Length: 230
Image (cartoon, rainbow, N blue to C red; front, side, top):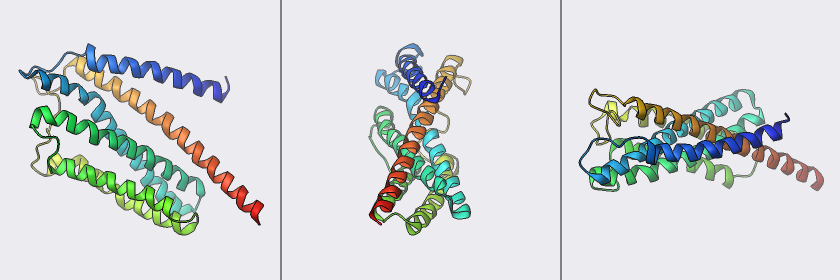
């Protein structure tokens, strides 16, 4: 099986798994035991909210590694991988920032509060949006690559702040999400969450692969245009 056929098969499989994940999260998994109907419904966002956050962190970790490797080796592919990862990371953190308030409104009574977890997540999103705008505003070259790599490395230090914020400070954000009576997720909920995490990881892998190929192709075309102009 050639690579194109294999990749198409992966995309088809991903579509099927996405539909299954939506059904499991919204219909199949039992709701949490709370009196409020709106809270029981809103809780189901958990199965999309948390995997999106984890994969946003993973994407920014790739930016961090790619930026270090570029500054060390000065190899173009690391810069392009960082750029692609940053865009995918912003996408997933955008999902987090959208689904979070939808979940928070029925539970906290407000769409947004300047909680440490929420604020640091917004700052993380802004850092990598700035990273993307920096790359697009500067002309292609070593200056752009070096500056964006520095931003990519520094920006990643907000990731552990976001992750550990609920442990380091007193926040409204729950310490342990979706707990049952024994203090942890039930078997069905845990299984659904792990399945959702797997599907989102596959989705992340497909998006990153496609975007990296696209950026690499754009880079080759730009080099060809420059050669033709000379």
